[in-house]
Image (cartoon, rainbow, N blue to C red):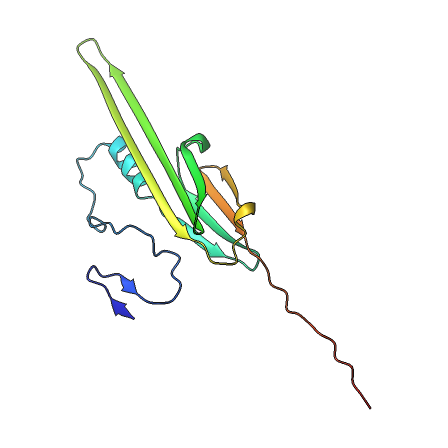
Length: 153
């Protein structure tokens, strides 16, 4: 396996995460003076998605706290590409006798996954519960062909 210039790995083996975007700022610690709304936005922008393969399906789980299902989009593009994206905008307002402050923040995320050949793209299902998005992509389960052979003699 050869290493790329940016520390990633290259291989001719099927890599479902091959469409991930390299983040040059990944690994830098958060600064202490960043407001909480900006940290929440950063959390949305850095959404991690787990991909689990079972014998029947590919299951994607994304932890999206505070995001409504209307703010998330799940799409299957040509070429067996599953795209999970979302956008969140938030406005926090404080009023006082002396001042008026409005803090706005927004964040977007998008993750793309190349699905294998055995994915049933017409049967993809998505559900959102308690801030966790679950996308289920059923697989074509190939049953082994069994042929009975007559025994002579």
